[in-house]
Length: 612
Image 1 (cartoon, rainbow, N blue to C red):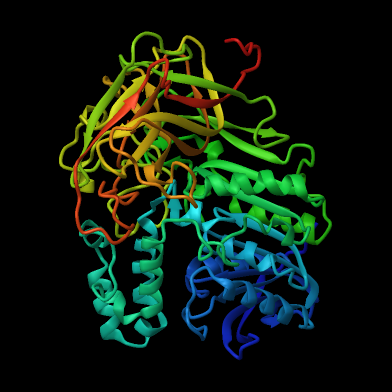
Image 2: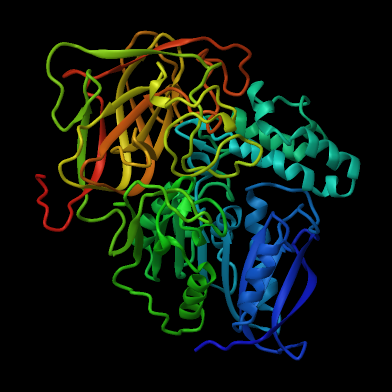
């Protein structure tokens, strides 16, 4: 059993980097009677841009120090008390992480073993720290972030996740420059209190916003807005892990994310890759959670309530991992089933009566698996039909398509989803009944499905339950009057009417987007020929959902999801530089020649044959 201490002792120090810059760190020691113990101890390290002295960091570090670890929270370069120029996600994170580990193992209180942990940014910089094979690195725990900033944190399907511009806006008022200048800090806070208002005016341009006072921050915002094509800028160390997997030392790794987390697809992809190339243990846990450090402790995401079993003692899980991998203790982790999944669904769809929790009962349960993707997955194509239905039957008959008009100035509003960094934007992560919401600034409270620019395809009520666990792919055959446009796809679980919801509810499960100019790949942009039919592939982040009998499985197709993604102006201008917008008439085909469909990762239920 790991030791337990009643006290901790915190000290602040500067850790020198190879270029002479000093990074600030708080070090928490196990203590007795106010005196730090000599050790040596294994060390837990978190490198953060969000203030090492924050409440969450202090609580986590104290938790581990009381259990016999030295815990360190460090401000990354250029943030808070750390010197240097900030460089969000770049080569300097690799070098600074290496130098920090090198310094740690030289200290007398370190027993030579370092575990790293952190959420979001602090999860991703762990991966890049590891790519330098720093001394002492012995175990890692990644929460909601891992490998790829291009098609992960910043872009998806070629479209810009606008929350990442909002993230830069939010960091500006607590930059080192702003912390040293109260007037500048006040200006930045006031200007960026409503980030969405800035984004409504179009792409960020140099010298226009108050970010001009912070050149590094402005340059990063402009870069991610304008660099839509996957090029060498995106493939730098500290941003891009694809192609560098073999640079990672073979140490135990635990990966965690949530079905409503914006990093779910990169975390599951990283697990699938690492579990094939590593000899050391790799584990994965996916819960029904949104993005953030403590959300796994809450049994709901948006309006969707999953029951008490969905909650998690987060630090206890990390402690079990580090006790097993740094101390050699047996923590009860099943080596034969390293994948732990929460399968959402099966609930009543009634309102949860607890005022403290609220929400709508979606329910669900945990299950352990041997692999990801699940070995018994049945990749099942389900086809779009002209009358608005979904069926496993291939369309028959004459050529057929449905046309709608997409206006970039009247986009489909974001209602829930796998979101992060939403501060300053009028959107909330999680599962929600797919209705517009005046409290989020929407024009009405009508169902999104009632909009003329949303195409709805759904199954009849299911006679048997259907489990969909894995990544979802939508293949559309489309044409447009524009030279570039977007297509979005959203998988929805439609609940039957009940006493609390006489019109039923339609919960968003997962959704994605594809920018037409990248239909041939992210490195080969090509504009459309107006009217020409092309094939578009939309990758939806993974899910694990049980569609209960009586429910309908629905697929919503449109061309916008705002403010989650930037709106495509339909003009074909260079990305992030457009000055015009135009309306596009977009057509989705669903006929024998162009059989648009969704590929579902169906998992046969116990006692159910694959034919069902």
